Length: 192
Image (cartoon, rainbow, N blue to C red):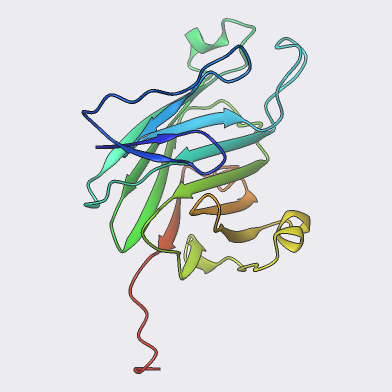
């Protein structure tokens, strides 16, 4: 397995080796293993009783061989015991594919998801994507980072990170299933 340092360039390290990194109080290294799915709140709540997570970021690193991996995201209100009455939401996120990597979201539960915005960063060091679809609908591609940041949805490829950055409204609001697909298929200019 490869391990990706969660640094400015998502530096890749082969597994099974010892590495030495400089560590101080301001830089504790974090890593994501190939096949990993790492969720994080975009808006960091300051008070769990009053603030809700309205933006979710997913950092994903597909398996080089396309093998399927999954992660289950659990959510409830975080303050009451309503989860005991079944008011919670479990979202299984399954990542699979090599030439087309699909993130399949499958949710169960009656808790209303407060997440409005989703940002997926997909690390893929060997090639840039050709296109991104959300439930079969093409998302716009931006070559300019500033235009991407100002857009409501779309995708951008970061040369520095060698990762596709995708943002959209939460595809799981009001539905129980959604698919986000990123195509890394070979592109044949001659066959155009």
